[in-house]
Image (cartoon, rainbow, N blue to C red; front, side, top):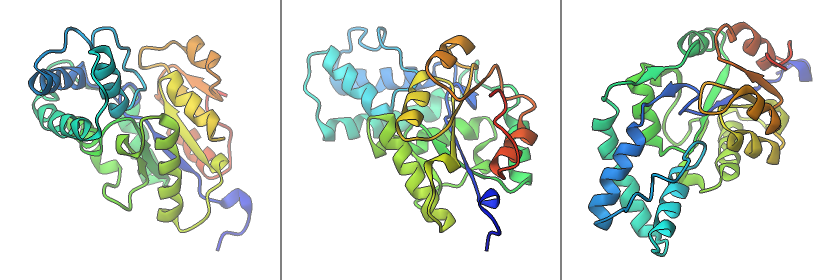
Length: 246
């Protein structure tokens, strides 16, 4: 039994692309391959889309709209299933890297017993493949009882976050107030979803957005990288310290 509110478990929810790893365009290449095979033509429909922070299902919807095609759930499912298979090859391409401080942070959180999970627009297996490529997959649980929110939970990031919060409460066996979770991401979409659900947001400028853009989006704290943050995030998770960068 916890002795006081300050001792309650807090949950750290990580985005993947631009936050933990840089996939060097592997996802875009895989999706382009699949869309071409499924639709016959894509006419550069992906070229004009800024994919940062979008869920995989929303990306497919936007591409179909750009091609003047109606959205169809079964087609979307086929595209995303094939996308994951194409990603197995594309993720091995050059340029992939784990972002600064991430490996040390996840190791420190694991050693400290922090509750961590994923809140990402990726398909579950797509997220796992990207993290596996960087040797980070073992820091997260996988499967139906894992603390996580993924693309199948909804096109909007808010729905993905709600699913992650629900699963976190189920996994921990306790009610979870939104303020007891933290979204860690690199885009305004991450921040906006967190704010909509009453969850604090720590933004990191290791993706395409600057510190200033992330601060303007309403992040509670902003960092240039995740380097040197294990101790301070462990302190926040145990209710003993402020957010780093706040």
